[in-house]
Amino acid sequence: MAVFDIDDIVQALQTARQQWREVQKRSLEPGGRELPAREALADIVNTLKGVLFPMRLGPPDLRQESENFYVGHALDSALHGLMAQARLELHYRARHDQPSADDIEQRAGVAVRAFAAKLPQIRALLDSDVLAAFHGDPAAGSVDEVLLCYPGVLAMIHHRFAHELYRLGLPLLARIVAEQAHAETGIDIHPGARIGASFFIDHGTGVVIGETSVIGERVRVYQAVTLGAKRFPRDAQGHLEKGLARHPIVEDDVVIYAGATILGRVTLGRGAVIGGNVWLTQDVAPGSHVTQAVSRNEATHGGTVNMLHAATAAARSTAEAGVAR
Figure (cartoon, rainbow, N blue to C red):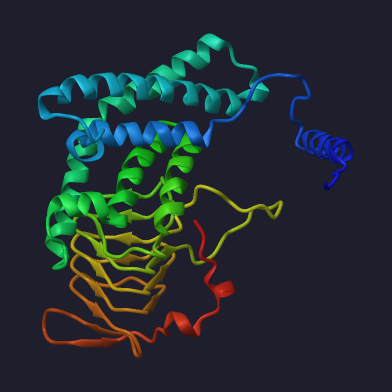
């Protein structure tokens, strides 16, 4: 039977933890968990999915006549769980200021009540996303199939929740919720991204949408599309400057095909179509069609053709791209 040096390993791990806490100026006082729990948030999000779509994502034995009872009970449970996680984040973020328990409770309550009030609007947005997927994919057999099966819809359910948490001053909770969908679907949407109604991600694997992206209504993107940053400015101390608008603006009714990479604070005008594997770092006029190879931009009026000398994504290095969220 194998014998392990458990005591030595435990002591070495304790030393590593203490060194980390000292370097990071963390408290060495004994106490409970400081950070929100991924497992708890996963349960909360799953419950909220059932609250929004009780007969599709709720418990399998639910009957329609019991919907309101289930929704009320599940919503109450989810919001109390969210309150507990919000308290943890707010206390963690303000730990150096030593906030009072009453202050944390008040701020958590304001944020979670505002989140709850937004749930009907989130449901309406998700209905538009589901319909966009159903109407935009000839392989979709029903709206129920779309809701139950499509990774792009799952990613948007998480994003609609995460974006609201982000907007209400709970960015860590928002990021955890977003990353849960990222892990499951391969679709990476930062919770700060602003996305309009009727958004459809077809197939979805490898899609990256950065924090300051702004996406209009009725936009469709395919797998491996990146809306990323072109460069990362640094301050006088050499640190990355955070919070700058560094990702694309995509106006209404734009289609972006598989593998396209759009970097920087550029604007894709309304109704533009971006072809597969195109690499763009400049604005695109409304109604344009940009295709790979010579990246041809065909204006919809006057029959003029402008040549955009853009190379494909395959010809650019990852280091130059600086793609980040």
